[in-house]
Image (cartoon, rainbow, N blue to C red; front, side, top):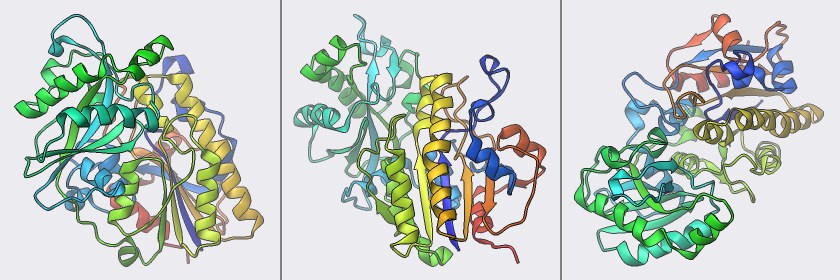
Length: 402
């Protein structure tokens, strides 16, 4: 038996009037999901523990079987692991997004945050911008490290875990009330804007009608994580397939394999087929028992507030991940259990994460189940199946029917 999770980050949503009061998941054309659902258990799972902030960090830890209340030490330290940052026990890691702010002729705190991802800027261009910041702002205490696309890392030696606002939570708002209380961090953010606003890359981006990547935004502070081995915990060898440093960091901390897929960028036009092939290679050729395919695009489109693109991201997951995945496994007469779910909702209405339950679908290629439902939030809720503790859903995946 092989085990696979296909996770559509932020895929869950609320009914939207423009979609006939359906959610993007219910509205999207997803023939593969709906065919699988007829032979699946569907239900709702609560991935965010009570009292914790909803995020891909806590939610994906849950889905992988790690109770965030025990294992979570901050988001950025997990990302730091994935890019090989040498963290000491006394270091604090912070996410360093390079975001778009409004460039108005007003004081820095009166600017508005326009885009948390700077138009999904490429890693190559953003690395050049971060290098310009690093040359002027890096010290023995503050060190910058390149990540992926707009997502980078700042290590603060002997720093403090400080409360910092997530940029995707304050889109379209003036940034002043959300800037760090720590004077040094605040000053570095303001100085980064001065360095980047007229950088040649941003001048060219504006000429092309693209959002400039013109300001560093620090958030997600935390300490060095300590995850137990996934294989020791579950008895399964696992492979992570993701474009996102956070997921690769969780995998690194858990001792899982990490597949680096060319062209996988976390955006709407990522290399879906390459991710699918990497997962299939892991379980069919390389001796792995379990593969985790993480698709970031639905979450990014939710943050952008684009109904059309979120629907498209879900349809791509169906046609370009689930379709070739299941066809190849079925053609090879492989017994497998497949779990499809989001980590958390990213509703178009709020353009950020919420802590609501998410729908799951658990398919077993050897099961004789025959149901009438499709896979979406309403049907999963009506099923009556409910898993209250998200970190237990992976046990449900690994528990084969007698």
